[in-house]
Amino acid sequence: MSTPSLKFGLPKGSLQDPTVDLFKQAGWNVYVSSRSYRPSINDDEIDMRLLRAQEIGRYIHEGFLDCGITGKDWIYENNAEVEVICDLAYSRATSRPTRWVLVVPEESPIKSVEDLEGKRIATEGIGITERYLASKGVNAKVEFSWGATEVKVPELVDAIVDITETGNSLRANNLRIVDTIMESYPQLVIGKEAAKDPWKRAKAETIGLMLRSALDARGKVGLKMNLPQNKLQSLLECLPSLRLPTASTLANSDEWVAVETVIDESVVREILPKLKELGAEGIIEYPLNKIIG
Ligand SMILES: Nc1ncnc2c1ncn2[C@@H]1O[C@H](COP(=O)(O)OP(=O)(O)OP(=O)(O)O)[C@@H](O)[C@H]1O
Ligand SMILES: O=P(O)(O)OC[C@H]1O[C@H](OP(=O)(O)OP(=O)(O)O)[C@H](O)[C@@H]1O
Ligand SMILES: [Mg+2]
Image 1 (cartoon, protein in one colour):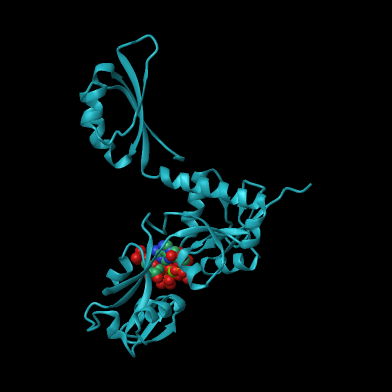
Image 2: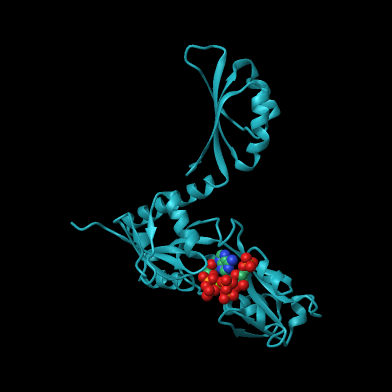
């Protein structure tokens, strides 16, 4: 019998590298060669296709793909009827969500969406923009932009609706946010038909669990140390960030305990000297690949 497989859409473009990195952390090596749209993966049960994020939702909806990762924004834009397995909190450059924003030049007289009545707006997300304007009761002409949308204001249009993540592009082009229309994270989604197949659903949920636990481990480290038993209470009192550590007695000693915990990597540099002061010994910090709550 041939191995069953899940036809999986990997997003090409902004999300490609961060998605491959996330799979790596979750335990899968994905290799995308420069001209091939069939990435290889060290799992015979996953059959990957590299496709534009804008199109993955539609291909899952139509059944060409079983499952995949794309932005919540493009699922909404395309009205793709898919089942969301989970949100995945990563972006192109940070762990912050991308935002679709209504933007004008810094010196523009436009202060609110109502000021756009009868005006022109360029965007890659026609549906997102039109539904937003309709919800505000504003009539404006929305025209499709193939990208590099920032350069179009104010010469070609009065405002644009574009994605922002770090805000660098807006700052570089002297643009001001008038309103935030939606926030979006990548999502792991499965098609209606694939979701009815117990094997495919279980495989997709396993992928979701591994990807989420990899994301949960980001920015966290494990910490282990030996501590005099009589200092355990002080440790908990003066280091509130060491929440719920595990303390176990050391073999051959009633006076020392082994303490183990998980903390934010950003606080390690403040905590380590304090642990040393309390008399902790053999302190080790180690990276974490996954955390399953
Ligand atoms: N900084 C970012 N810029 C663009 N998209 C981002 C960013 N971070 C995350 N994304 C997400 O990546 C997905 C694809 O974005 P987008 O539609 O801009 O295409 P792209 O992959 O950037 O390709 P293109 O070069 O055509 O813009 C969207 O779901 C979007 O929310
Ligand atoms: O807030 P930032 O971190 O600067 O990210 C936002 C920028 O990234 C996207 O552009 P992309 O690189 O996808 O090119 P595009 O303009 O051709 O879509 C988006 O359209 C913004 O220009
Ligand atoms: Mg883009």
